[in-house]
Image 1 (cartoon, rainbow, N blue to C red):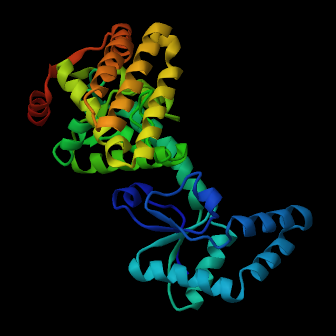
Image 2: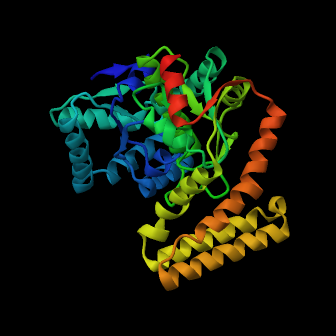
Image 3: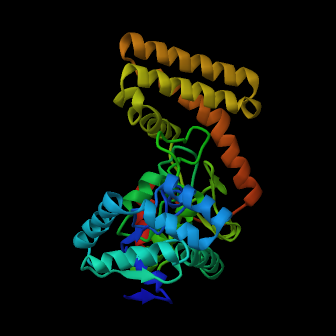
Length: 362
């Protein structure tokens, strides 16, 4: 049966190779290979039982219990799930945490069923160590290009428009968070490990097709509850920036789309719209100290007014009132204060079209 001892992880990530991960779901959710599918040999409850037996009676008894649990119909169903993936993708690989008994047994059962799959000899643990080392290496050895600008400038939108034209990585997309006090998405953020694993994958893919410095959005070290490594963040903040210069009216429209049009206020039920408004009120309460009590109260009053207008009249325009105040009173002072402290070199300044032309020509 085939094994890989020294895995070419770089090529694996660039080619988006698929992996069957036979660890329990609770392990998989803490971090996995990008493009992995979780088909456990032991589910969370089964793993816990085997683990308890290992601690109390040793490895031999734990392995014996594992075989007893995964037998009969249980074993048949798990093998069928693995074979289904292999038939869809014959080049798929298989792994557990250290390349130990779980992936070895799974590989043997697959072989006995008439199929072959290559196993990672060292498992996910080795890949995770490699990922951490290589994010640090890339951060120390490469220069980044940084797209900066006040909140609502449309930085993320521009990054997405540049996809396949100029090398870029969307940090907020990877973190599943808009990177602000109001930026939490309805779906949860990935684990820290998955955020970093997929960040490295995106960087390597972008480097593979272009020799130009990768463009990132200017971010704080924390993106929601995910964080950038010390070395990566230092590189992000050390170089010149490309500054988006967008009028306040357009910024309000951009935030209106992100916070109103493209949320459950417009897209959901009336109950879901109420939840969205209440979430914004809660978010405002959390930043009262920085806003000041009077300004926070005024924004909350505007939010409630917008909520009432929406419920009674399906009106949306009143949302622009609290959005403008939030930009002018909260986000702009934060950003401009940070920029004043950093005093970065401005590589270029302009609107979306001007920045696009500058990047594609430089």
